[in-house]
Length: 266
Figure 1 (cartoon, rainbow, N blue to C red):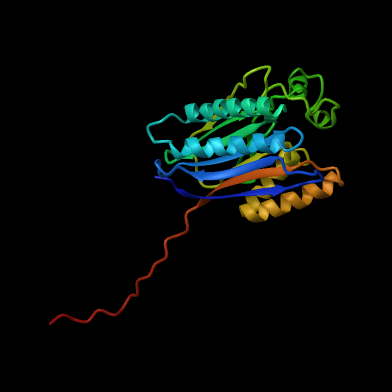
Figure 2 (figure 1 turned 180 degrees about the vertical axis):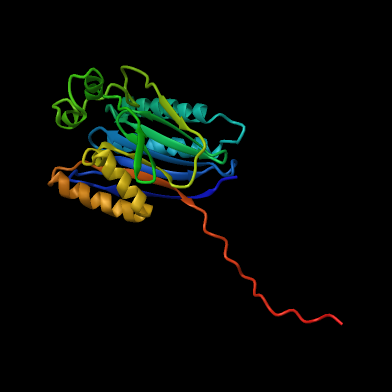
């Protein structure tokens, strides 16, 4: 039995772009009680193409999660979301003579105290325990490859001239996307997750993100992170979109009985 309650929320800001091309969603599974999903998609493509791509990702995620049952496999579900959304985005691109793309990151929490996630591109999932950073996904980007090879540091990657080059996306006509999975078992109170587009993580350290999520409700953390991201972007910010999932301790049981003096039985 879970020893926590789930508290979740999303946050979003246009930044200094003309259009919001990111999307986020939080869903429960109608046929699988105790399962929940968070998803973030960062759309790319001019003339609303990116917005269409990200919207398709979130719609596909909800549609397939609505059809999910407890006996189904979560990883297969997430892979199906990627493949189906990729196909629709690619076909829409052909019919509209555009080439819209999208990233994908999603988290599923199960009643078995499991967290299972998947991502494509450079939208990230962070896992925290209390105020402590535990792990994050690795971007499918050119600069992440340079970091892995020791050619640049993670901080240098943020300002690298090719920092926006992704090697794996949904909607590409050149290659089908591949999915990277992650999982964590034995979830407990004070575990938390942040899913976000690069318009958020670009402006924060891992320690700053974990502290903000731990010390605040999802709504309060959203307001704080957006405000600081806007300050640090200095009028050059990207779309900023994220979802926060916190596992909070169960409230202590309130005693509602009153002790009275017992009368003597005759």
